[in-house]
Image (cartoon, rainbow, N blue to C red; front, side, top):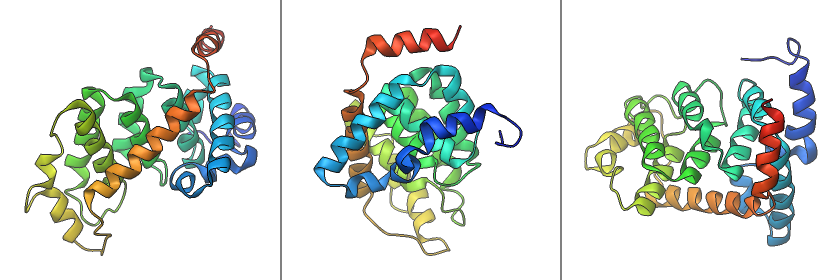
Length: 216
């Protein structure tokens, strides 16, 4: 993990991409509580920032703390930079920091392929077996259900069967929310829709130019 006092470039990226308007605090569930005008304004700024950041800079943010990783994952979701799929899957499975996991799930759900569903299923197969760990199981299940609906699959069924891993995790100590799984799918769907709206403010041509400039 990179630390600001060890890496002079990380603080610069944090100032430019993570902290403006306290962006990192607004990503995630807070988006759903915004008014239509607030959401549109935030989507416009998020899309423009996601358009500017380079591949290399995203990689640096993904090595930072939860604020940096969460912001980077959202940028990746907005621009659908699928070249980060494997890295996001690794970070989700490692669960090294809090708060960033939902952002990884949103990005994978936004990519929308069977490969992304497999990464989510791998995470659930590991962490639903740990009822004492209340990490990002709900977000991952919501993302997998979202992808099942999109892809015409039923990969989440293996976890939701009566007596299956999801119910074992929910019922195990400590106490957890018993919201319906479809509520998690709906949340992820709304966050993916916001990422798509933000993408409208990042043109494909400009993204390609920035990517080439950043990787040379």
